[in-house]
Image (cartoon, rainbow, N blue to C red; front, top):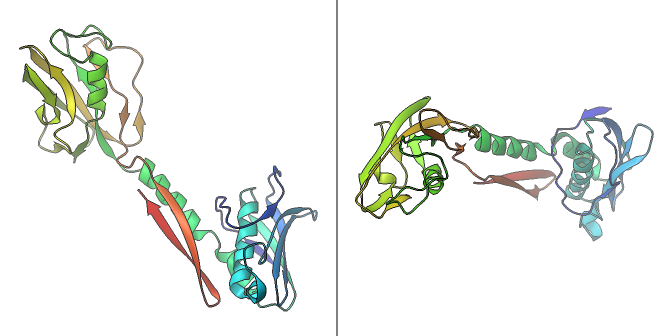
Length: 276
């Protein structure tokens, strides 16, 4: 009988036998040899060439535990994860032997990898689908170019742009909006000096922007945008004296997931952990 294998990514747990560098194989055959003291799972292509294999013994089970349903589930899951990474999506299952791992192996073939599939989808959504708010443009008519310096300011224009890039904002903004900074030195310019619209706020008011060493007026215009993903600035300057900033809109900068399995009688359960 043919069983559709869930699409999951490779996860190498335990000792798994497989052929390295194998070509992509869309269809195959899963051979299950279930005896009373071991369960061996071998996956071949339609021509009978071995693609992957695993057993209860090589999965870490010893003695009488090798003949348990949980050991059979583990062996089947290990073998399947390897071939799915090679593109196998459908397989015919052939079972031999009177062992207790017969039904457990079928359950593993049907259910293996669901937690991994969910984990990958959640990680992709956290990193790419959540919107964030960033400063995307700075305007100042007194600045000739991005790599110039201004008398009375310790940082260069480029350093100020990099500091503005790191400002963390929170908003209910849709599209773009304008903001500004106007400070008289000497003193430090921080995120709390940004004049924002009422629907935008800074998360950390102490974030540093510039150091004014002389009694000068530091006035610039800002463009704020809410979006998702990345925004890469154009390589040229604009005629109105504005300078674009590379923006990273993602509120979540890093996300990982891990899967932990445990057995409960004849059932094998998977627990998904998301690390943000």
